[in-house]
Each structure stands twice: as structure tokens, then as C-alpha cells.
Length: 111
Length: 113
Image 1 (tube, rainbow over the protein chains, first blue to last red):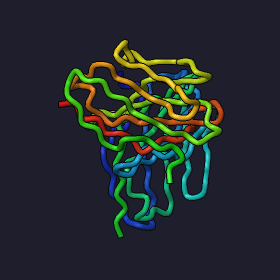
Image 2 (cartoon, each protein chain N blue to C red):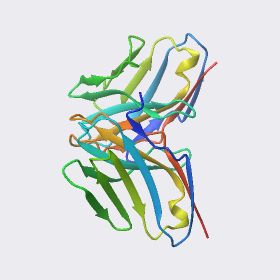
Image 3 (cartoon, helix red, strand yellow):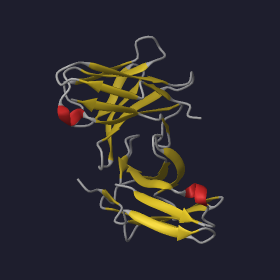
Image 4 (tube, rainbow over the protein chains, first blue to last red):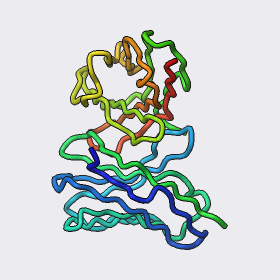
């Protein structure tokens, strides 16, 4: 079951630059998409979400873009900071509270 | 600091034994969830719980699993007879209203030997 996919297991970005994390999905009926951040030994922390009726949502340094025709969403972090280094999961839901997660992308922001 | 507390943080158990994982949400949480993450794999939904009933469960959540909120506070996940493949991080999540952006606890690492 690969309904939500994150094809890049890792990403390395210099501090101050933009980080772009990508996520693809297969089920066109998903109605809500979320990004979670996870540090080691902690649970996932909700970061930002977007409804399927929108194509962009912005919250401070974080912006999520949704391209429904391509079944693709992305998370932009700008400017990236060392504290952003974590594993980022995208997730989707379909008319319920149940989340379907991707496999995660490990982001490392270096000075 | 997380609003959802899970205990224990790490549990080691022998195959075939029963384990109970506990989750202590804050008082206005009404919706509860369990997820697990096997090492190196994705986070997977197990079950959702509202108003003392299971709302939804995945195919992973078979007869070996059960959930309850016996004292109106702790939300527990019981695995009746653990198998080696139950070894994983188990995450509890909770929310005060319905919707997918809920709060996760920091997890319990279950190791079945």
C-alpha cells in the first residue's frame, strides 16, 4: 500500500536557503493533507495542513503547495534553520481522522 | 512539551505475554488514536476512539488488540499475546475536536523478545 510516497529519503540544505520537501499520492479522493515533523525519541509534531480545495497554505516560514492534477504536494521552508533538522512526514486523510503517512524525508540544515 | 504523555517510554516483553501501553491526554481531549511505526517503516494507523467506542480500525488491529479508557483519563492499548512482529514504536494521539491535525505523544518503544 503506497498511497502516500516520499521518494527522497534525505535532503541536505544550507542554513538560510530554501528547503523543498516533496510528496506524491495516488488516491485522488484524499481531502486533507498534512505535514508533520519528527525529532528522534519524540512523536510527530503537526506542522501545517492544506485542504484539497486549496492550492497553497502559508504559516510563517512554512508553505505547503498542492497540485491536484499531478497528485503532488510540497513543503517549502524558507529560510531554513539548523533547528529545522528533523524527519518530515507528509500525511493524507480521506473523510476521516485516519492519517495515511509517507515514509518520511530526513532534512539536515547545515551552517 | 507534549500535551499527550505516554508510559512507559520503553517496554521489553517476552513473546506471548500481554502488554498494556498507556496514554494520558489532557482533560479536554475527546478523540483518541493509536499509531505504530515499525523500525524503518512508515507510521501506520491502528485505531481511533471516541465516546468510549472504536470509531475506525485498521486491518492491523486484529483480535489481539484492544483499547479502552477505563477511568475517563488514561487511554490504553492492550496487546493480548505479543508476537515478535509487534515490536515497534507505538504512538498515542489525541484531539479536542474531530479533524486530522491532532497531537501525538512521544511514543512507547515496545520490544518483544
